[in-house]
Image 1 (cartoon, rainbow, N blue to C red):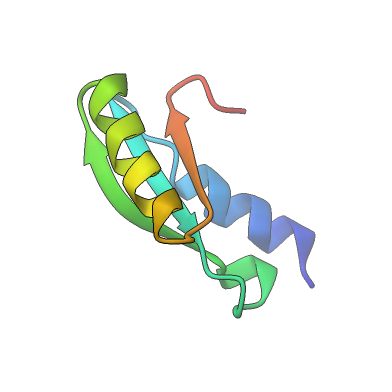
Image 2: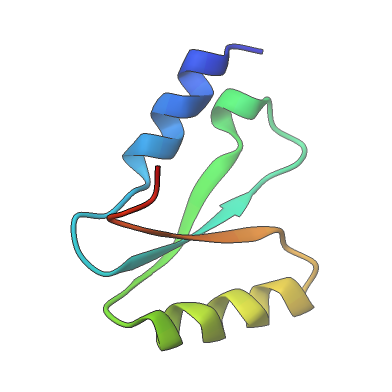
Length: 68
């Protein structure tokens, strides 16, 4: 596992505006596990999409411009 590659993939998913709903593919190596599900302008939209994906058993996170 390459921690630096994983962190770079995370930084690439952090939007300049709005919110990104990001999923984790648990079958991939950590440096390739993150993928974009949706970009929204409001947190409410992002939370609704994230909840729907969680109900499907998908592990998700919401990133915004303040994500570290």
